[in-house]
Length: 352
Ligand SMILES: Cc1cc2nc3c(=O)[nH]c(=O)nc-3n(C[C@H](O)[C@H](O)[C@H](O)COP(=O)(O)O)c2cc1C
Image (cartoon, rainbow, N blue to C red; front, side, top):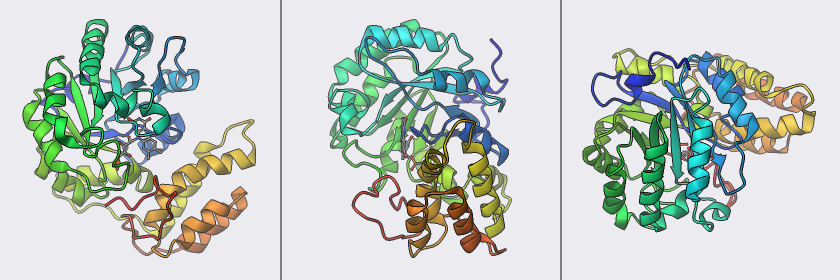
């Protein structure tokens, strides 16, 4: 199986390009179209798939598996699994590692109640002996890289040290730490001090995750945590240039600033990328809105862009909205603005 040449170095603490930059997995957002789109703007060093749900009778989601096989970016992909059934996780890991994946990742962070109540995703952080047993079985079965993406605890970080001790036992190749607990959701401050603790304690590379919103902030987070790289989700959807900007900042160059029309062109490219034959207009617009939830926070502060985007039903309405706000040459920082948000705007949240 041919994997990109950079694959091996991504998982080394020494001698690897620093920092390693990963696109965070985001269900219903970071699909193959999204990977290809972000790659055009510089893109991350590695992609993580949306999670494969794993249970006794599961089969790997065909669309996500196809993304791994078709990935034309030349950048490696890590396949993420979510579940707690050890034989099913082992079986699925074997199926996934037959695909061109650089590694297999276990989700220990999903905060959706429907997931954590079944003791999967973030729910597993309440059962560390079970995490230990899952990782032991996966380490034995997985011959590609094995990684974990975790939060810092279920409802408090009190057992974080214990979690790190479990992770340290299993020769993991990479650990990503989202510096929030499961019950914190997506909007609380991020505990970069705990990411730093993980980077000190573990012998594999650690990626810092949570709220990285600009190149400048990325360098601060790297400095503050001592992490070996960053995983970025919402910040990359809002600002697809962010990976290129971080690389520029790392070289001491001023990060390139997009202008209104550059962002407008990105949104048009997003409309193109997310459409596919047979997808009706309403579904297509719904799909685009999942991205606009994040992008809208970087456009303007009153919330009108976001509110109008959420009401849109047609592509024409969206295009009109993009022209109204973005047909100009002023620089766009694309950092999250304090847009007024409602109770249900958990995912759009002001994340800085
Ligand atoms: C819409 C959405 C979907 C997500 N789906 C996943 C997922 O499938 N697997 C996972 O590990 N994390 C998932 N996450 C969490 C992100 O990977 C990431 O940890 C979180 O958004 C914090 O990083 P950010 O501030 O850079 O976005 C999701 C987050 C959002 C907002």
